[in-house]
Length: 272
Image 1 (cartoon, one colour):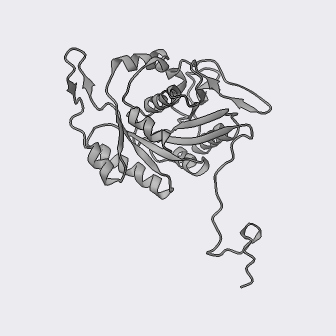
Image 2: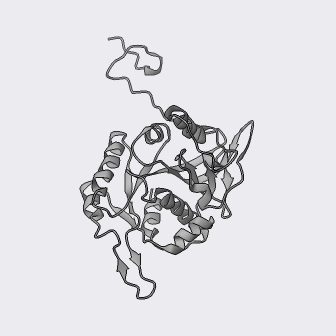
């Protein structure tokens, strides 16, 4: 009765009132077009590796890319790109570090006195840092930003899902049998938060013998295809175990590694 339909200035709780959005505004000087979360249900499946490779692959396609490293207690993105100098800032915000091919990076490792110092922080502080990487960092004209999240469905994943304007998530997994259950947890969290699932990347899918070219399934036959079908999504890449890639990552020269394994993922991202 007597509703003015002005929900912003109404104190009455009713079913018509829209819930307040928790999405944060970026730095006023930032311009980020697409934000893609990269998530895994468990650790050790190469989530940061895939995040880095996606940023490199899209950068090679002529898009301006960036990586927001939300894995605060286990940051590995700067090392993969060979970044060791501390990030700088001014009164207008923090400036992301720039890789040799122009990819923008922000990680807690770029702010620490020593990159090997542990980050011994409680959950609220970690979540606050992730938010600041979005609100306080001056991201330039970024076509695709990839958010590297820590494993699991805890505080940081919830913070990213609620606070950043995600266009979708990519789930990274490995071929082991228990993966189906782990993937399902990530899928259900995304569904609860109304975040689109763009696809699944299976890492360490096989090893290709350099002598004979035969593919060996080190972790056994994969059931990722059935899992993807069950969850209404698709497998957008199967990444091999490649010693050359591991070397590039350790050397900080990930931008020099060339592979066509992410071609389908790139095509999918272009269509967003």
